[in-house]
Figure 1 (cartoon, rainbow, N blue to C red):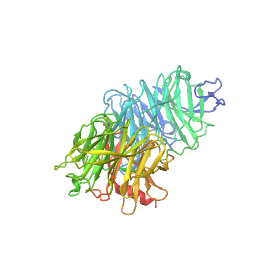
Figure 2: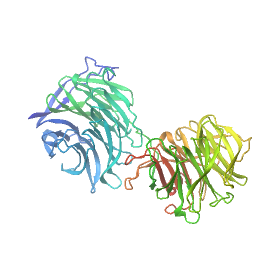
Figure 3: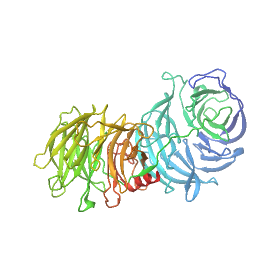
Figure 4: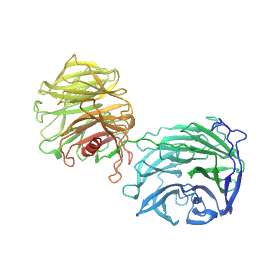
Length: 638
C-alpha cells in the first residue's frame, strides 16, 4: 500500500528564452506535501474541470476513485483501470453528469460511465476492442456538442467512435473511422476548441492530428526526442488545457514541458522531488494552472499548483452554420478518390422515379434512385464531370441528353434514356484537349452545347447534334482561364457561363458562342471561398437565382446571389446526423442543384459528392440535402 500525496509547487523558476527541448540547470520546482490517502497501483489521475477539490484516480486494484479534499473517498467503481478521460456537463436523463472513459484491463474493453453529482458511477456502455488491445484513449467534445472517443491500439491504429448524441442526449456507440496513428502509443489528448488530437509515441515524441472526423489523418510533430529532436529520454504523457497549452512529461529526467502555440512560448521545468513523473493532467482553474502527476517511482499521485504561468486565451476555430444530409447514396465500388460529380434527371410524369447520375472516375457513370440505391453501372471509362439537359429540342425518346468528360479517351461520352428509363451509352465525341477535365452543358434557342476544359486552363465549346443514332459535335469556340479550372455551370435563363479557377476564384462569360466575349472574374478566393474552387451549379428559386459553389479548402459551400456584385448570401457545412447515421461532408468535388419539387423536397434539393465517407468508413458517395435548409440560411441573411 502506497501513499497518495498531494504536493504544492512552491516556486517556479523558468529561464527566459529556454525552449521546450532544452534543460536549463536552474529551472527547479520545489514541493511540499499537503495531505495523504492510501492507494494501490495507480497510473493516471485528473482534477475535474472547475472542481479543484475533486480528483478522479485510476487504480489497478481499487478501480476508479473519486477523491475529495483531505483525501476523502467520495465514490468508486471496482475494476482494473489505468487510462482515463472525462468530459463534464453531459446531459443524461435530464441531469448534468461527467462522462468517464477508461480501458478495463480485465475485460479488455472500453468502459463508458457517467458520474453524477453525488459521486455515483453508472456503466453506460462498453466498446469492444476490434483487433488489438487499446492502449490509450481520449474524449473529444465536437463543436455541435456531440462527444467522440479516440482509442489508440497496440497495432498503431486509432479508432474514432461517436459516444454521445448531444441532440438526443443519449449515449451511443457508433464507429466513425480508423486511421494509422503511432506505434508504441503511450497517451493521447484532445484540444476541443481547436479540434486537435495529440498522440504520444514513447521513444519519439508528441504528434498532432486534426480531430475532425472529416479530416485526413495527417500528422505534424509537436515535440520530439533525440535523435529526432532535443527532448531527453522517452515521452510518456501529454495533457492539453482549455487555452490550448500543451504539457508533456519526460520522466527519465524529471521534466515537465510547456508549449503554448498561441504565443510561441516554450518552457521546461525540472521537478527535483519526483523520481519518475509518468503521467500528467493539467487544468486551468480560478486563474491558475493545476496539475496532477503520477510518480511511478513512489506509486503516488501528486498535485502541482503551477504559479506565474498565464493562460493564453483562444477564440477557437470559426465554423459556418451546418446543415444535415437527408439521404446518402450507396458508396462507389472502391476506396480512393473515385466519386466526383452528380447530376439529376427529372421524370416529368412521375418525379419519384427521377434519377441521380454520379461519376466514378475509376469506372464510369453510376445511376441511383432518389433513395440512394445503385440502379445502373455504365463502365465506359474514367468519367470525371457529368451534366444533363432535358428539352423538347433534343430529338430522342426522352428529350434528354447526358454528357460526361471521359479521361480514359480524352473524349465526351454521351448518354440518353431508353423507353424503360434505362440510361444508355450513345457514343463518344473526340476532343483535341491534352487532358480533359471539367464539363457542363448549355441549352438555348440556338442549340445544345457542351463546355469542356483542360487542366491547362483551356475551355472548348461544342454544338451537339444528338438527333441521329450516332451523335456528332462541332467545336464553335475556344478560350482560356489563367490556371487550372474544373467546375462550371451554364445558366440557360441568363445565357451566362460560370467557371471555377481552382486556386483563384469564379469567372463568368457569355455562354452563346461569341468569340469576342471575354471572361470576367466575379469572386476571388479569400476568407469565405477557399481553394480549391470545385463544383458549382445555378439554382433558380421563386424569388431569385443563386450560384452554389464547393469551397473545398474549408469543406464548405458558398451561395452567391446572381445579381449586381454577386454578394455572398451564406456559407455552410454539411454535418453528421447521428439519428440517421449519415456522416458529414468534406473535400467535395462536384455538386448539383434542382429547384424541381420532388417527393420530400418541395423546393428541390442539393446533391454533393462526399470525399470522406465515414460512420462507418466506406468508399466515397453522394449526399442529398433538402433545399429548404439552404433557403432558410439565405433568408436569415436578409
